[in-house]
Image 1 (cartoon, one colour):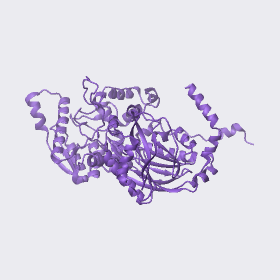
Image 2: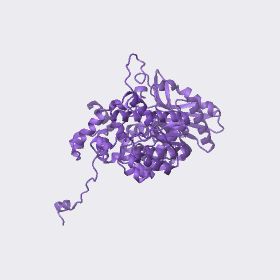
Image 3: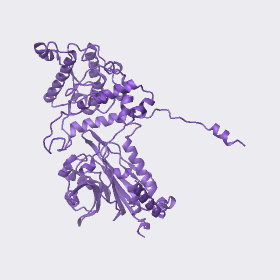
Image 4: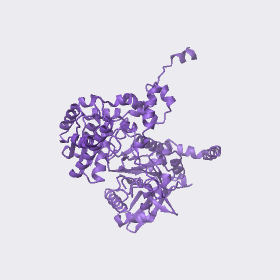
Length: 293
Length: 297
């Protein structure tokens, strides 16, 4: 007869294959696309009675995904893509955006913003830093998208993803200004998964993410961490894992510090302006009504 | 011995209507509920269940005060749409209720017949979610009772959303003799992994567990539509007393579910799996243990 000790020795072991929190980035793309298409239809058509969308298509993966979702929700004939290059914009941005627009069969218009931006800069602020010019470009593009929406009877649709929103990696009251945003609760790595599922051209999906505000710029270069890693850390932080727990999962203290600092220093960018409160009926402080009421 | 009575001869047709309300528009929602109830009745439904806050929409913040009605006012809004139906019709729907100087997240059960409308029962939400996206306790008061009540379909209870997520609420309902639980929800879809929303998956698992443990029917109506980016999941189900899903609505889309409810199933299932009787037999000890846990907490 086999001994109890020998029986125990023979017991097979199953170890959990994933780190705690790995599932936080999982996404069922088909379900997400169904949800986001329904979201766009409901918010634009049923809630606001608007049947057309305006999207700034940059050549990057985020706006490609948004343009595709809009095309599904409203039909390609009702989606108006705008490419808005500045003199420093890379030629690739323009051609990659065109690739997406052609694939979807949506309306395409190029509006150069160089004269708009430089009209102000050259006449008034010739020494403006590249960073300031980048912000000016972003705000000019937003101005155009809102004006074109007014002209077309459309709504501008935002393209900012959750990672860049959490990192404050956007121009305040520019990229974040459109009233409807389908991607704002999806991490960048989830947007890439959606892009693949939606058939966004491989060239757009595989290019290095860049705001293209300054030559040679890349998101990951600016952050000092790759999106894949940043999202794994960020998603755990938001789910309540302590930094010690994240450290034990194999991430370095430097990586965790980059993410923590980005998030902690940009809370203000995720809010409306700070308004002095003088009464007990202050808007959104005491007077509380939801956005769709 | 009220609790040992089974309405074993009773069969009826129930409908669960998953709809998107018009935000803050009581008149439009009363018309929608009335029209859907009339249509379900025409298709054979005796009881039509609508989701949580289907008379107003869910996320209203301080706007709850603008749309809150007394239970009889809410019933009369719908009664005005239904009129005097040719065949008797019972309707359950969720609304913000104004009562006793407070506002509640409530559901009401009304009976409509050629003789007019009759308020059968009102339930005020007992567990108010106040975390994350939810802020109920800030804007509504908490109900203090979980009741079962008699209807022409046997004994029923109403539970609202988070009440399904606590084992205590359905346990109390079942102990008070509920044979059918109308479980109404407004649950924003979230966490999209593995083919479903995590909140919908959890709600379904728990509804099945409630039916399985207590041998009750669950008729679940889930809100759909979007409110400020939050998309209600839909995916309503009707679960039989063995825990089997007998009708299942799609996620996200407006839909009507119809199911034949045979209360005779309760007796059969409970005789095979007498969990509720077992619970009742140790209830005194369970009650004492709960009191002790309460003293220690």
